[in-house]
Each structure stands twice: as structure tokens, then as C-alpha cells.
Image (cartoon, rainbow, N blue to C red; front, side, top):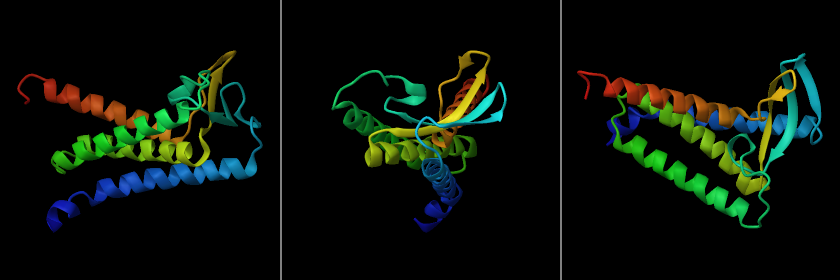
Length: 165
């Protein structure tokens, strides 16, 4: 049992590091920026802008106004985090790419879940744009989830390749 846990220490550290980095950056933004305040980092491309996202990734469902929205989104996120955890524990720790993917996804999900439970919204602050096109603001947790999904996709494709199984 102990060796099974020890094999997962790198992934537990990844989840923890992702969560800590996400919380730290969000607290930094909240303490140093007013809501909707923006600082240009790379003119015409990248700003740090403090926004509150009441929706899901990239502001989806932000326009929906319902008292139950935050509770439902929190419940969905908690369920997703639980499913990722169960899947990670049930798959071999030696499958590094899969475990990395799940670690990033879990760390990001927990970071955004913390915000939703603590504030009723998620703190976003990374804003990329070109001309008048602005990518929806996001945060470290969203970035981790996106990295995890890409790694998970690579793992799925790799295992579907001929001769793999």
C-alpha cells in the first residue's frame, strides 16, 4: 500500500503546486488590482485585467442569472474533480503522461472550485488579444486544465495508434 502511494507522490505534488500557484496569483491580483483594472504587459497582445467570471471556462454561461448557477457549477466541478481523482487512482502510476494530464486537470479544477465556493465567482486575469479580438480572460487553473486536456488527448491518440493497446 505504501509503495502504491509513493508512486503517486509526483502527481500529488503537481496537483498541490498547481493549486498553490493558482491561489497565489489570484490573491496577488485581488490585493493589487481593482475590479476591471487593467495593466498592459505587451501592447496589442497581453494585459493583466482583474475580472470576475460567474460562468465556466472562458466566461461561458456568465450571462445566465440564477441564484442556483453558482451552486450547480460548484457541484459539477466537485463531481468532475472526484471523477478525475477516482480515474487517476484506478490507473497505473507508471502511466506518466496520463497521470500528468489528470494532475493538471485536478489541480486546475480544485483552484476554480475554491474560488466558486469562497466567492461565488472565479478570479480571471490573463487577457490576450489581437486588434479588437479578445480571447476570454482566464487564470492559472484554466491554463492547467487546458494543458491537462491536451496531454490527455495525446495519451488517447497514442493508445489508439496501430499496435498499441
